[in-house]
Image (cartoon, rainbow, N blue to C red; front, top):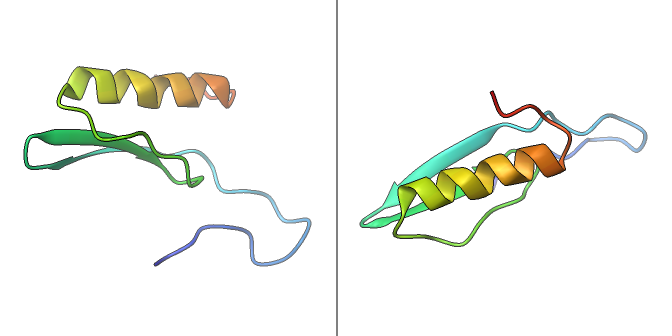
Length: 62
């Protein structure tokens, strides 16, 4: 599994990049920082949870 964690102590964490993925009838949000949301049947809910994560991390989702 690919990790985007810093290679050395004191280096900066990667920027937050949100992705919405689908598997069958489920959608889920994941972030490059390692955060992920549970699978949801509602794509809109998956997007909202992802945007909520970005806001909580201090990132403007737009």
